[in-house]
Image (cartoon, rainbow, N blue to C red):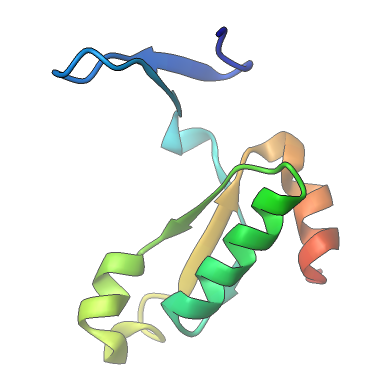
Length: 92
């Protein structure tokens, strides 16, 4: 199986090959006040064939009172999928 454009092969210690996307290449398409809503948005995008990532979920999950200070829980995607992801999620 070949990686998609912008992905890199990573070989964990157990020898399983996975594909990762460089985090610096991602753009935020939506922010949510809690982890559950962000995870739902991520799953919705996954159903549409868009790989998404939930950023800051661990920090907000442990310290939910910091969600507003951190700007919420972010959902990020590849820049090429950003416009379609925003359309799917209904954000501007």
